[in-house]
Image 1 (cartoon, rainbow, N blue to C red):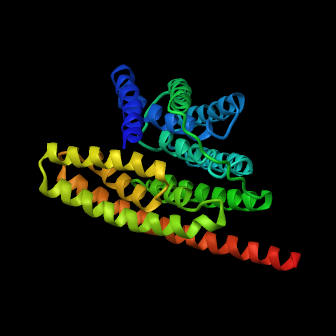
Image 2 (image 1 turned 90 degrees about the vertical axis):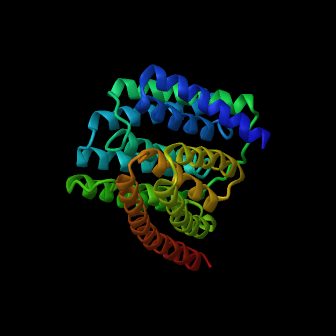
Amino acid sequence: MPTTLKLLVAILIPSAIVSVLGGVSASMGFGLAMGLGMAVTPVSRPRQAALLVVLGAALGGLASWAGSTPWAIAVLIFVSAVLFALTNQRSAGLLSLTPIIVILFGPGPIDLSWWAAVLWILGGGVVGALITRLLKFQAPALPVEKRTAWEHGIAVGILCAGIMFWSLAFDIPHGYWIAVTVLMALRPLPNQRRETLNGRLIGTFLGAIIALLAVLFLPVWGAIIVAVLCLFFLVWYSMGGAYLMQALALTPMLLIFASLGDIERGFELTIERVVFTVIGIVAAVLIALVLRHWESRREAASD
């Protein structure tokens, strides 16, 4: 509990300052970049961590420049998946936030010029690294076998690039949630996939119900309290690794803040979130089956 509160304060204070200085988009981008800095620092040397944050900033800047251009975002998603495959050989999920950065800074809700995107990501990455050092967070490296890492990265890259091209070319509102679901739920380590896929699906359903009830039946200040509590539990369970609870806390927090005071929009966003999550899970399960088939064939050939 004390560590969670310290981390929450350490995240919220810089984010609030950035919000005042640069606006909501800057704060969102800065917060996402803090997550990147905190992810790479425990398992990387300082120069390596700096390089990974710079890569995230470059992708964020290019995504902001590309905007909602279907082919450009698709290319950037695939490039980020290739980087994902490379760095997973060092530790699983090391650059898992880079394709999310491409989505949110491009067609997503973060609206910044390319140079502002680069600066806020660099700043957020540095602050995230400092928080990790100050609070002495540690994490074990979980290297992924080279061929498994590449198979996962290429498969996810092609699928998510296709999803993003389709959703942007046909102007599907919040269609990028499908790609985000695949990216977050389909883990590079085979023994983690079942848990994260189930956790994403169940957590999103339960979280959507919480969000809908809060938006429909609570006053605005009550819904805000629920969202803040969800943020607290998101930080808490992110430290503990319970993915179902992370998804359960993340979903109502996002939906409540996105639809605050607007019941109709809250209902619309909740339905979209659930539908796109189901589609994303189905797509991720199909890719997981393909990856498992490749792994089984490889194991049989080596026997």
